[in-house]
Amino acid sequence: MCKSSTDNEDSAKNDSTQLPAALWEALCVGLVVLTLWLSIGAAAAPRGPVFALECVFVAGVLGGRLVSLIAKKTEVPLPPLVGMLGAGILLRNVPYLRTYVGEAVDAGSSSALRTCALALILARAGLGLDAAALKRLRWAAARLA
Image 1 (cartoon, one colour):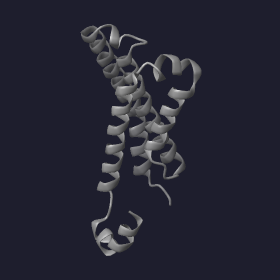
Image 2: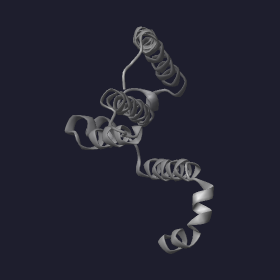
Image 3: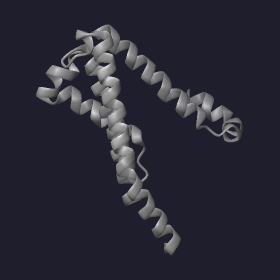
């Protein structure tokens, strides 16, 4: 499909506004980290469990955005969840990162967060279902469940 000149202008406009938006988001993340560090104390300091959760969140968001950019440029339909999972796998398995981020969160908190994440993923998947198609295929869906 051929792009028109307005599509090229919109693309250039979006590219020129991405850098200031990224800088603004980085500033906001930095201020949140600093605020948590000042209000909570040692738990939110680097190598603490709250800081590790912040790193996991930021890495997940960045991984999701990276996969979204790749999917947009290559027109391969990859969901951002792939990048989020990849970031989590890297944080847990890379030796230096594992020591300071992957193992800094205690097991109880990690289990609760994984359960919440699974619930959110399943809820988003359920909201994306087509009710009419599900009603039409109810017996097949019941057999698969």
